[in-house]
Image (tube, rainbow, N blue to C red):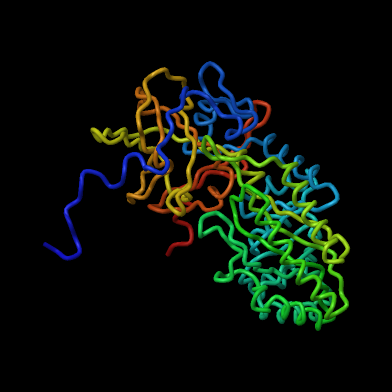
Length: 460
């Protein structure tokens, strides 16, 4: 027998993980309002979003299909703007960005965070005010920095010593004085997946506080009169559901603010605590209230500043998932249904890890429902999988679906408004789905579906 191969058992993984057996819903037709878009409901058995029937959406726009509830998205923008009155709210474009979303953000009075020249181009193409844009990124190219300086973005978040030198050069070249913040890694352990925790020292972002690199970054920026140091930035991770980590981060940032004041006589007026606020994906997940987050963070910053003997800095936050996540639903058509006797039923749909890689990437969980009709059939333990040539091509690892599920039924997966279209890919040469916005019973394409011509374009 090979040293590297061994006989397989009757199953690849435990059917019901001991640490989290999937709960059988009392009713497979209900739509939990904390998970689904604010306008979601059922009419004559079919799921509706923004007043639009999912059957009509798929008939008109095809499947798979990303659906964005415009009113849900806009209302969450307003929730954050009102809760953080007196501070700044910048939408994190990496969650999901297209030209129409940039218009919504602009119209609702929020700023915008971008991480690349492409994201900046999207914003500028719709006339987004550059002074309301912040440029992030751990490896900004010279061209990206030059574009940011040239158009006059509101803030550039410095992430390396080389970048500081480049900014000084570019500021001289263009006769501008960009406002700069320092990305500080504060050593906070965010209780989230390793791949979305960003405040520990051993990772690619920012300047370490504990090593003294952040203090040195301040020295170098302040030594360049062509740059204006205006504040500190911290981001502790994603899918965070309480403010404890932010309090630790703020206290540690305050030590640097004090050091900068004592060493340079400079009081920095701004403090950006990033985003990462979590949303509920499955029953039992915590959904932090926006007002509670805002009150908690503002209280933390005020107390920390007063304790340190500093003026209270203007607070900036960067919600992305918290605005876009619940506004989005992905619709799929059921194809092959394969019962593995004694284990589970595999329900294959017409998309997969090309339109939602989060499950494969870091074990994300989702809520899914039969959307094109209601059913009173007995629940069956299922695994919602895609059509790609990977065993890990799962959308929902364990869920209950009606036992009368049939080919051609539509499945809706909630909470896909953030990091699904942004991370979409063309694995196995599948075109990326369209994105449609729905509102008041009407739908319109805001990102068109890719075609085979798109996939072949650029090839010799």
